[in-house]
Length: 454
Image 1 (tube, rainbow, N blue to C red):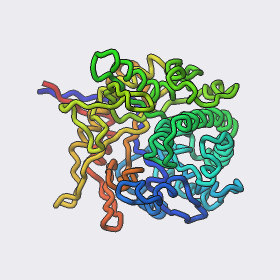
Image 2: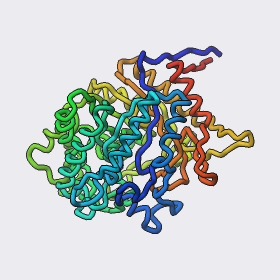
Image 3: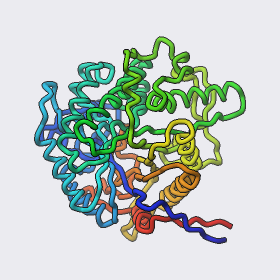
Image 4: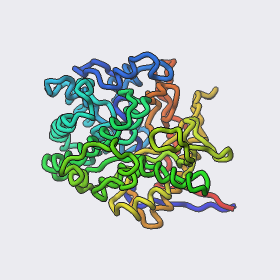
């Protein structure tokens, strides 16, 4: 057996990521009012373990401690999101200065620690007052997003030079409005597609506002992309995989880079397709500086005539390992393939892996440490897949591990752990870096990983 050192490009960005609702807490503090996730998590039966994000992991009060931990680990880059209802809490459109002040302090603390912030404008916590008016089905929510965007970019662009408009619009639209697993908990195909359209529209229309307010910054969007394969060579499975790819990948990529929705999706959804006004698709094509890609899994797809959305289902092969987060196959080859596909079919823009990580049944060992060899191996293999894509011409500039610390995992509550830092929910939310945190620290220090072969 021999080992090889895979070195990443100079100035490669290594970081971690979080989202406001999942970590902050501070519910109704500092003038913050409810988001759709507050309403959803307070509804009995919606969250697997009955938890809410009222406290989450209390980052609202402990951000200095968390940033100090990032600094101790040598982290230099951090992807975070802003809580819209902390900044525009009620329907009069009033800007809450205490919300801006919180992020002022947070950003200053990051910069003083030598950590560069990458800020996401929308990571799913829509103000409830906007949902009460129809949420993302109402075109006026696009205008509200633009106003919010201008406010925060004006306030923070002196310190934030990398902005991401939306995180995973298909998850926000489909999981929240198609299958009811996320806030606001609706189940309607036309609603889900209209929400998706307005999110992409809000993204596109926000770009010129950001550029006008802060010409020096870079701006992109984050799409979560899966590698999709048919379960068999049967024609019906091949078609099912094409539909899956169309609904979950191409429907969110084609408008950004081709100025159109995929024709096969238009044909498939028919009258359920959203209302598209003149200029919408042109607006969605606003030029970007980079694309964020969240990657977690391959989707192995078979035909299923009973499934109402795309007549397809995900299937599994018993010999392919899966994360504790059950639907996620551990398939680093898929990340390599996704990166190659984006370059070949869509864009030569700089790419960031804006999220990648896995869940395990982490626990504190007798030595007081948290050993997560499965996550270390997972990250190592996905880093190696990224290196291969870079070697073959993909312009990948950085990699943000999901997530910095265990947190409120949406509909699963606190039952799933994605963090490289363990949060002890039974003991004052104390933070314990896992082995994976030290692995990332070593990787960013050397800007390389070792791979072994026979």
